[in-house]
Length: 308
Image (cartoon, rainbow, N blue to C red; front, top):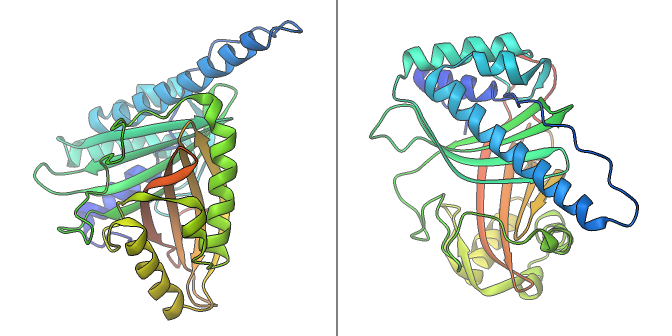
């Protein structure tokens, strides 16, 4: 949802600026022919570096108002997709300062981070004022030349209660870790989730739950009950209510056992719809856990890039 209070609008505007920077990555030497393991190591190091920098800059800018990290790490021409913030590094610096001045105890509590290729996805509980529930936020960053070049995000207020008894952030499936699984699982799990998402959400075929979802499925969407039965009832009712629902996936980001799908949901033709990030956890070839964040696409934007 788009926040309506001035404080929340200031917060989301700041998050918009999250096209935060990245310290230039050390150059990776070309991999000699026949040394695939060296290539794998280099790729893992690059992905780890991108994740480290994304987290470091988010917290530096918004918790400490450190505009210096923007000068050092973000491209001056970075592209912004948050509808409340214009393009450019100067906007980001100004937003960071303003948020830190207005919310000196601002917390960017990062829960999990994944990276694939030149993209990083960060899942966080963002709290402007201590004692409030804050927002669930997904930030997506695109790296170019070792610096963040582009940013998308989706933010939703954390509700007071949940239909499933799970909060919007914890890991319930075992092992209970926020870290992604082994990298060699990435390609397989990405293909599985892409197929499952296409069948269930894009084509609205509930039989996908029988094929791709595990019996011990944990739900973090606060409006849907836990388990496969809860997903079947919740999504079935949603599909019946909105038979012309159109879901268009825009990008898929995966690492290990975590796979995120960034999509445009339009429930009724002609409406602007919602920007949504769905994050799935895959264990043993089945989807066992799901988190998501939904935000209405507004009528106007401070930039010309759209939310996707």
